[in-house]
Image 1 (cartoon, rainbow, N blue to C red):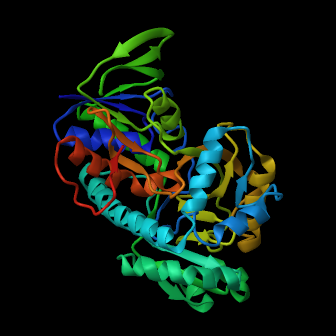
Image 2: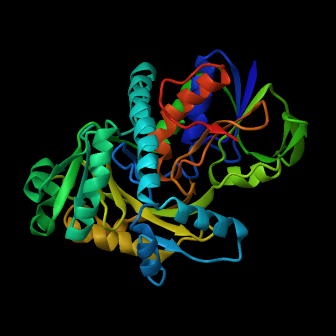
Image 3: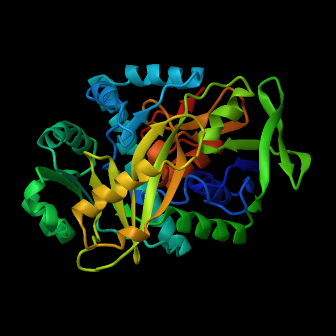
Length: 417
C-alpha cells in the first residue's frame, strides 16, 4: 500500500519513517531541495515536555494587549484584514480559561512524554547524531510575578506525569553555572531532568537519509498545488515539478505542510484552525566554554529558549501573528541578542549572531491535529506550533498506527474532522 506524505520537515520525515517501518511504500513530497529547511531549520532545539503551558491561558489576554505596541514583545499580534487571523484570535480567547488550559496541558504532556520516548528509541535504533544533549531543561524567572504564575501549570504538569520540579535561584545556578551573572535576579526556577535538546535540522536530514536507505522516495523541488477528489476520497495530489504539472497517486495521503496545511486544506473545504506564528532565532559561536551553558534553558519572562548545539549557541523565541511573510524583523532579532548577552555576557561572540525566522503552524490551543479527517484516505499531522520538534516522533508513531487501523499507545485527543 502506497502513502504520500506532503512535507519534509521534522514532522513529515518522522511520519515517513514510521509508516515505512509499518511496511508501507512511502513517497515524501517537498518543495525545497532538502529536508528540514523551513520551520525545522533553526528552531529552538528543545525536546521539551516541560514546555507544555499553552499560550492561551488566563493571563494571556492582558499580556497580549500590553504587548501590542511593543515591537520587540514576546508575543506580537498585528491585526490584519484577514478572516483566518481573526477566527484564530477568537478561538484563542475561548481557550484562555483555566479549565481549557488544564485540558490542553494534559494533551501536550501526554503527547510530549510519549514522543520523547519514541525519539530516544529511534535515536538508538537508527544511530542518529544531531548535537543532542540529555541534561534536562531549566526554566528560570527574573520576575517574581512570572515565577508565581508558573507554579500552578508546573503542578498540573507533575500531576500528568511531567516531573517539573520547583527550585530556587541557588539551585538553578548549581544546575547551570552559566546563570551565575544573574544569580541575584533569579526569583525562582523549575527543572525537568528528563528533557533534552538537539539540532532539529540535523536530525531531520539524518533521518531522511536513513529513510531513503530504507526505501522511502523523496521528491524534492516539488510544490503541492491541489488535490483531485471524488466524494470523500482523495484520488491524487497535483504538483509542479521541474516546471511541469503532474498528478501523483497513492492509496493514502498525509498532510504535514506546517502553516501551509491550512491553505491547502481549504481547497478541499476542510477548515484547519492553524495560523502562522513567525518565530526568530539566533545562532552564535561559543566564546568561553566555562561561561556558556550546557543545560537547555527557558527564559519564560521573555519567552526565549536556549540550546547548546556543539560549539554553537541557539536562542529562539518570540511569536509574531502577522500573516505568511518571512521578512526578517531586525528589531526582534536584536532583542534576543540583547537579552541573552545580558544574562551571560561572556558566553558567545554576540556580534557574530546569525539571524533566522520561520513560520510555526500554531493552533489556538497549541494542540496539534493528528489523525483522520472526513476524507477517508487523508490523514493529518500538522499544527504543532513551537513544539514540532518535541512532538514529532510521537505524532508520527501515533499516525502510523492510525493509518494501519491500530490504536496508538498514547492518551491524546486525536483529530476526527
